[in-house]
Length: 337
Image (tube, rainbow, N blue to C red; front, side, top):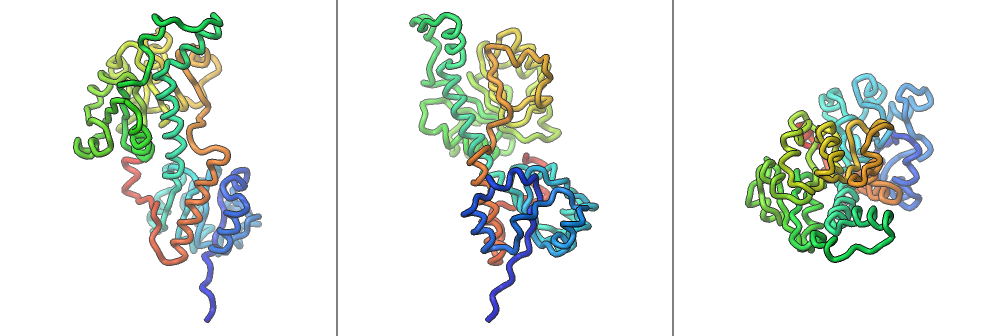
């Protein structure tokens, strides 16, 4: 009895990411599941060298550097049945033409949520210990802080406000459970009972901002959330409060935030900004109450293999006639990242 035909598959991404997404053992597992040429990584769908493979392709494994899949690009892939994205959001990748063709779309966004949640947890705990303030003090004085300088330090009962029960937000809520923190949640799609099951108290956005010592953003970047933390809402955060943003810079009015940070009233941990990166003259690069990182919270280095593994598992399911676990539906994009 002949063996079933493997799905014809093509990589479409910046080739620099391929070795980390699919290290040799994982690439071998992929090759047992798919008819794929590991040496062919497409960035330009008009490249004559890729035309034959694209014309036969039933599956695209996409990643950072893949062009927007609009009607013009899709004309090169007439047999396409599935797009498996070895990265996070597909919002900027998938065009209306792909949805209209009924192509199955899956994303490794769940795998990308874990390192973001881990980064956020680390920052919450460090902020609670005033680690960044003490670092600056130690650099200046070379002296240990006295008891009077640590009375407000510590994570016992610290109030952490999580905005958005997204994949990252939910994973963060799980990671926060072992600690003696008071966790607050704002998400308009989550009931008080569900929030309680997640280990948090459900609040309006304004009440969360008033009550939190640390505010962590995990909402999607959609029109309804643009500048959701504007000047008036930032003013609700208590003096000495800390904002952590690992979601998208556009969720915050950065002019208003910059004013609060320059004044010293608030502090911030910012892995994302608006614009990104900030202009060279931004004061946020030099403020002692700002911990600024270059969009590193998501998957980097050896964490990329987790994304590749999710894609391989999805392809194995498709090859076996089983629906994907991480499917993205068109309707989901209205309220997810």
